Length: 497
Image (tube, rainbow, N blue to C red; front, side, top):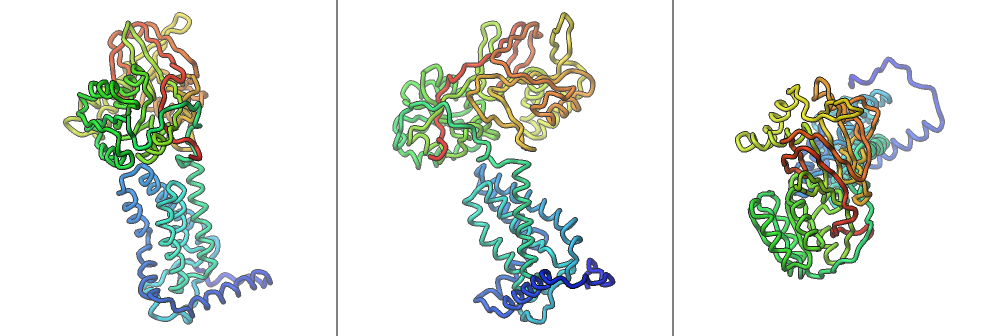
C-alpha cells in the first residue's frame, strides 16, 4: 500500500469526460501489457531500474561532459539542472496534487515486473519527467547530443508502462512536465545560441579554402592546445607554431611577418597579445579558444575549431572594438575588461600563491586576504571631496545580464565602455556581492554604472594595480581609458552560414 494514498478519502462523483479518459487510459495500459517486443523483457526493466534516483542521467551527463568540448559540458550541466528542477516539482507538487493509485499488475507478465515496486502515487511519472527534462535540456544546448540521448529517454519513459508501474497518461504528463522544466531553466539561464552577438559590421577578408596563409601560434601553457591539431585536420595547409608562454609575443611577431591571417590558440591573455600584434601589422585575426574562460572567443560566437574553420574557409569576418588604456606613455589594449581596485589586487595575490597551492585554492585565499582588508584601493574626487572606491570596472562593450546567467556582451562594436563602480565602505565582500547581484542595474546603493566612449582618471595612487584581460600592470597619476571603434578584424561564422 502506498503511504501517499489516503484510502479514507471519498472517491469523487461521476464525470463523463473524466471517466471516458480514464477508461481509455486503462485500455492503453492493457494493450501495452499484451505486447511482446523482442528483447524488451530483458532490456526495459533493467533500463527502468537504472534510472532510479536519476543515476542513469548523472552517469550520462558525466559521459557527455567527458567529451571535453565547451558545448558538451554546458549541455550536461543544463540537462542535470533541468532534471533537478523537474524532480523537485514532481516530489513537492505533482505526486501530492493527484493521488492516483498505481495500476493493477494482473495484466502484466511476471517476467516484466520490477522486483521492487514503487510505493508513491502514480501520477505523474517521475522517471518520465526526469528523462524528458534531461534529454530536452541537453538538446537545447547541443542538438547533436540531444539526438543521442533522446532514444534512451524515450525508452525509459516507455519502460514505465511496459513494466506496469504507470498508466500511459502518467508518463505523458511526466514527460510534459520534464520538458517544461528544461524550458524554464533556459528562461533563467539562456543557451549560448540565444545570446550570440549580431554578425556586424561585416568586412571583407581572404577566404582560405584549405587554410593556406593562416599561421596559428598556440600557447603550450594553455592546456587545450590539442584543439589546434583538430583545426589542422580541417585546414591542412595552415601552419602551426607551438611555443611556451614566455615566447608567445616573439612568435606572434615572427608569424605576422609571413602570414595573410594571424591565428592564435590560448586564453584571453594570449588572445590580447595576438590582437596587439595583428593591429600593428594590419592583419585579420583568427581566434581558437584554448584557455579556461575564453570570454572574447565565446562572446564573438567562436566556440570550437569547426566554427573557426568554417569562417576561415568562407571568408567570414566582422569588425570589433578594442579598448585601450594609457598612463605616462605606457599603453595597453583590452578586448574584454579593464579594472582598478580590489580585483587587480586579488589577481596579483592569486598569481603569487597559485604555484604553491594550485589555481582554485589560491583564488579563495587571495579573496579572503584582499577582501578582509579595510584599506580602500581607490579614491574618486567629486566636487572637491574624495570618496573611497572598492572597484572600477570598464568593459569593452556593454555587458547584459541574461536571467541568472553571467553577464554577456551582445554587441562587440557598440562604441562604448561599460563602466561600473563599487562604492567604498565597510564589509567589502558584501558590497562586491551586492554589486555582482545587481548586475547592470544602477539602483544598488553599492553600485553605479554608466556607458561612455572615454574615461579620464586623475590622482591615481602611484603603483596602483590595473588588470586587463587577466594581466596585471602598475599605473599611477593620470590614466585614460578609451575605445578604438571597429579597429580589429576577426574571423567568425556568420549567422545562417
